[in-house]
Image 1 (cartoon, helix red, strand yellow):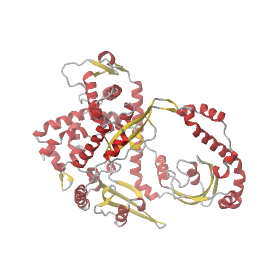
Image 2 (image 1 turned 45 degrees about the vertical axis):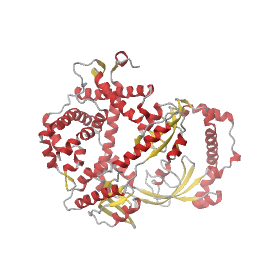
Image 3 (image 1 turned 90 degrees about the horizontal axis):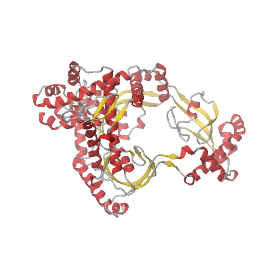
Length: 607
C-alpha cells in the first residue's frame, strides 16, 4: 500500500481540491511559498498593492504554460504571437494570486498549526480517497489514511501537502469572509421552487405572420436596409473570429474495459445495499457524476420516462429505500437508491440517488488514438498538404465549423479551451498537434481568421431584409388583432383558427422554466399561462415569433410536502450559486482597484 501511495504522490499533490479559490491556486502551478525557488532575493518584476512579484514566480508560471502549449503545437514550435499570449496569461495568473494573498494578509487571516493538523487528519485529498490502497471492501478506510499520516517514509509527501494548505486555507477563509453575509430568503426559495415545479398545459393560437400576410404585400427598399444597418451598427461588431476544419480520434472502449467497471460496480452495489451503508458517502467517494457527486448523488424528483430506458425499468421496480444492482446505460454503470415515490392522478414521480461509474477506454486504447492523431497531424502539417485529402488517406472525415468568435466554445465541439486558443493564436493554414478534449483527440486546421471589426453591409444585407420583412408582417398582424380578438371571444380559439386559416396547437406540460412545445422558452406565454384559471383565455401575447392567444387546459400547483422535503437541498443550491456570484463580483472589483506595477518591459524586454 505504501509503495502505491508513494508512486501516486505527484497526482495527489496536483489534484488536491479545497475550494474554488483553492483550485485556482493549484491550476496556476504557483510556488506555494509565494516566492521563487531560487536562492537570494530575486529582482522585483512588479508588484500588486505593494506585494512583490518576483522574476522566479513569473518565469515558473510561464514555463508551465509554455510546456502545455508545446504539447498542443505541431513539432512543439510556438509562434511569436503565441508566446506573447502566454506571457500575458502568466502575468495575469501571478497578479491574481498575489492579489488574493495580499488581501488575506491585510485581513490578518492565517491558519494555526492546530487548525492545519485537524484539517489534514479529517480531510484526505480526493485522490487519496479513490486509491485502492486506502479502501477496504471498496470503501475508503479512514484508519488506513491515519496510519499513512504517521508513516515516517511518507513525511516528505505530507510536508508538501502541509505547505500547500498553509497557503490555501487562508484563501479559503478569505472566501468564506467575502460570502459570509449571503442569504436566501424564504420568498426567493419558494419562488424558485414554484418556477421549477408548478406545471401547466395550454392550447394556443399562433398568429403566424407568414400565413396572415403574403410576401406580395410587403416591400423593403435598399434605403430601408441601409438605415437599419446604421441604426443597429453596434450589433454587427465582431470580435476576432475564425473558421476551422477538424478531425477527431476517440479511443474505443473494449469488452475488457466494460467488464472491469462492471466488476467494480457489482462490488460497490453489494456494499451500498448493506443496511448500515452510507449511500451519500459512497457517492462522494466513488461516483463519476460530477453534477451530483457533491450532494450525495441526489437526482431530485423526476418522471421515470425522463430517464434512459434501462434506468427507468430498474428504478420503477425498486421499493423505497432499496438499492439496485449495477445498471448499464449509455453513460456507464449506475447503482440506484430509491428515496421516495409519489403517485398523483396516475402520474408517477420518483426521487432517487445514484452512483455512476463511467466506462473509460484503456490506456492502450487512448495511446493508440493519440498516436493516430499525431500521425495525421504530422502528415497534414507537411508543406503543401491538403487537409481533406490527408484525412481521406487516414480514413477520417473532416468537419468544418461555421465562423465563430474568439471564446471558449467551438460550434460542433462545445467548450474547448485549448482548441479555441490554437485557432486564435495561429495564422490561416496552421495545423495543430493532437489536442485532447472530452476523451477524444482532435487535429484542427485554421481555415480562416478575421480581425475584430464591423461586418460589412453586404454580408448582412439578406439577413436585414428578412428581419425587415418580418417586422412589417408583424405590424400588419397587429392591425388585424382587434378582428381576431373579437372572433376568439365569440367562437373560441377553434373558431378564430377556421376563420383566419390558422391552426390551434396544444402544448406539453411545462414549468415557467421549460421550453413550451411549438412556442419556445423565455417568452411571456408561460408567465401569462400561470396567471389564468382553468379554461380562461388570454391574448394577444407577443413573443419573438409573433402573437399568441392561449387557453389554460390544466394547472398543477407545487406539492407543499415535496417542497418541505427538498427545501434544504434547494436552499443549499441557491446559496452556493449566490456565494459564487458574490465572490466573483468582489474579486472583479478587487482586481479593478488593484495597483499593479509591471516592470517586465524594463527587466525582461517584453512588450
